[in-house]
Amino acid sequence: MSFVEYGDTIQEGDTAIVFLGHESMFPVKVQHGSKTQTKTQILYSTDISLITMMLELKPGSIVCESGTGSGSLSHAIIRTVAPTGHLYTVEFHQQRAEKAVEEFREHKVEHLVTVKNQDVCKNGFGVSNVADAVFLDIPSPWEAIGHAKSALKVEGGRFCSFSPCIEQVQRTCLALEEHGFTEINTLEILLRVYNVRTISLQIPDLGKAAEDNSNPGFDSSNQANQGVLCGSQQQGTIQFKSGVPLREMVGHTGYLTFATKSLL
Image (cartoon, rainbow, N blue to C red; front, side, top):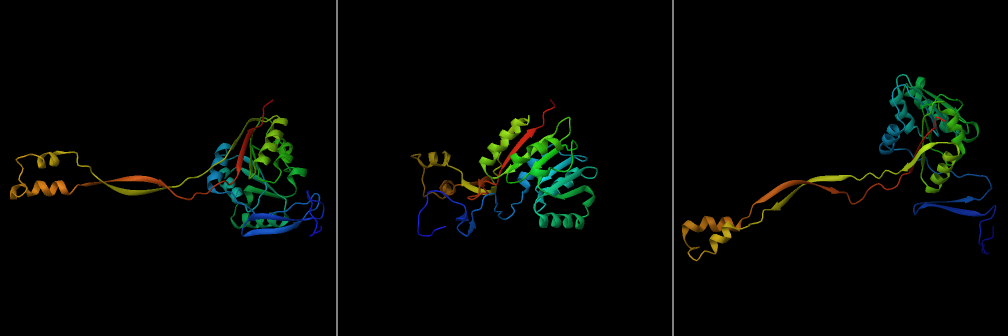
């Protein structure tokens, strides 16, 4: 590419800047069909809890997953389906797949999981009509919808896809409709934490002491009336608990798209 001439469109071989933030920018060379991977984003407990519930996972469930990544969701699934269930997880990158196998062995759950190193969009999960649920966390989930449907049981099952961008969600939903899935819906979880603290407020003086003070016969110099005067000057306080949201919160992590394999 020329560094002195201006172009309206990106061309093959150009250098593009991937901007992830002010402290995270790097150049890539534009090549047709190539992909650029950023750091692995793990799923946290907020999303995991909803995924587990919406996929209707329980002990004995059979689950297919791709990609494995760091294994955050994989471990949560294994704990949910144990002791009689099984997880089939597919990872495209060989190094990540090998690392996952090592961790599953160290954590003594290797008998509950099968790891495959392959492209799920091209080769599927390696099983057919056995899964109660399928989960996808890949760049182009719409390309694996057919394989997800084949992996699910004939009598039906649940599907979930995690995508950070809404354009991915749109294409995935269209693919789900084309393959006959029903109950398609997309959710986003925004967790807002509240700080519970004790607050003290003065009790308003609504009147008896003020009425006594305004009485024409009230003598403030009289020793007997000093207690009334002091009471009117020292208002009481009341304490109660209040929830106040934190000024900062975790924003968007990703969109969760759920669907059901039709029985027809």
